[in-house]
Picture 1 (cartoon, rainbow, N blue to C red):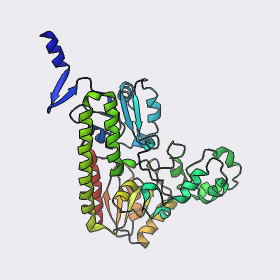
Picture 2 (picture 1 turned 120 degrees about the vertical axis):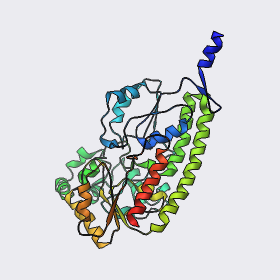
Picture 3 (picture 1 turned 180 degrees about the vertical axis):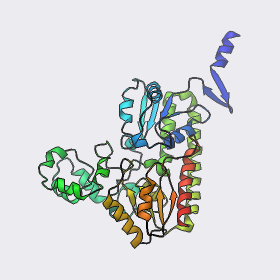
Picture 4 (picture 1 turned 30 degrees about the vertical axis):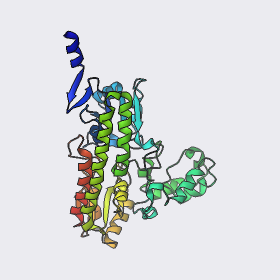
Length: 369
């Protein structure tokens, strides 16, 4: 009898599904990733969330409890250094048996290059972004990066170039570098992303539901590799979640239909994955990065665009300087709404991701109607 009780205590029967008592210890860095992992783990266990969704992922400081949770984890899901650069150091404390999934490094992920300038002139055409067909020059520059044949010319033409691996060496060859740096207030914004493993790519890739659908399978596969007893549950949940996201895409497109053609400005350039999936492009961003405020020249450039092109909407974010939004809207008829890419104010868990995408669409509709 005691042996039978021991066996029974080692398992749990939940909704007719066999669930191992030894549930993997899983970590997710940001709330949208945590939501996708939670959805796949539904009925088995719950992952731990590191960055609260009211905090900026880029600048978050680990608490001792966070560091301990990461150190004890069997499996870690994170976006990558381009979004949470501090996470790299924390991952060094992981034990050798831990598995780490970096979504920005996955070959299955669709990544978009950073847009240049306040008004996105270089990337107005979003067609075929999935294959990066509209970025022939970017791909050529990347392919030629090793020998830097055109680096000197490219540096003069593009102050905001992401790849500065040989910056110190080339600095002596650019007598006008300091002058150019002073002439471009937004240069510092761009350099906040330099030096990261994926510095040429926008790290907000979770805002593409296409990426999310792909990652659900990756999450299920990784969980199954360390918890094969529950593999059936993980893959069934992932399949259900993909169907839910298909329905969400239809819903969001219906929501946006009445305001298509409206023009909007975002606070910082975090939304191009959402814009690409739903074919609704922003006209510019007040700030390129979430790591620093824009300079006066960039603010003036955005303000001029709002006035000259009758921009209808300026979207602010709850974590950042509302005064900058007011400054660019001054003297215009534009309206404003709050939008957030990580789910500010939404309860963390499996439902956060679809609620986040739906809330972003609703903010855009409310601002443009």
